Length: 59
Image (cartoon, rainbow, N blue to C red; front, side, top):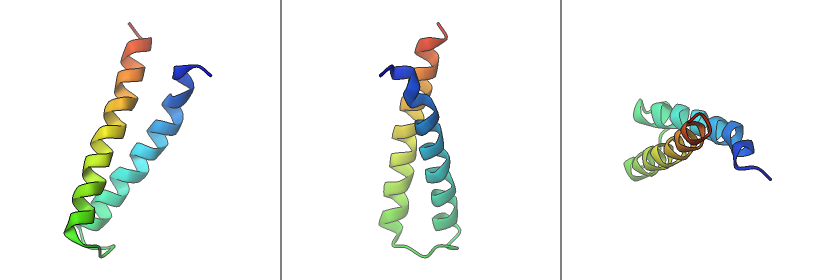
């Protein structure tokens, strides 16, 4: 399996995590603030992985 095949799933996961971070931050989904921070950190990790793969294949 090629590393580039992870681009779409990572993009989808990142988008879902961004939406969750926004919804928990605006308190539409009520969670402990710790979970909001965890979701935000996971978003940064998945977005960074997604961007790194895309950048490495476009060089």
